[in-house]
Amino acid sequence: MAQNTIVVTVRLSIQPESVDDFVEAAQRLMVVPTQSVPGCMRYELWQDLDQPHLFEIIEEWESESAHADHLGSDWLRPVMESLAPFAAGPFEMQRLHNTG
Image (tube, rainbow, N blue to C red; front, top):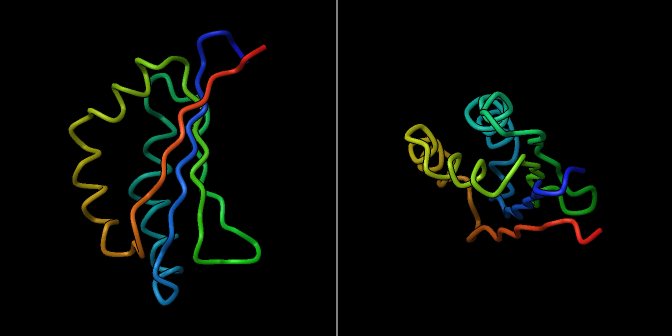
């Protein structure tokens, strides 16, 4: 991992009856498009094995500014609004840097 890269994790709780629809919509609207955003090195949606309504988005970005550009992009807000009805609560984001 390069010195300036950051890892972002986002924990999501989804309404149990909406899990399948959420996965399809999230992959199509957010995951696949974000993987081609400049500065994005990794962007994946992971599902909890024991609690299938819980998800983690695991992201790796070349820099904090690349992640900030992504968060400020014009296309992201409508995507988040489209996915919001699936949520069972607020998401939790962590931004991490390598200490080594």
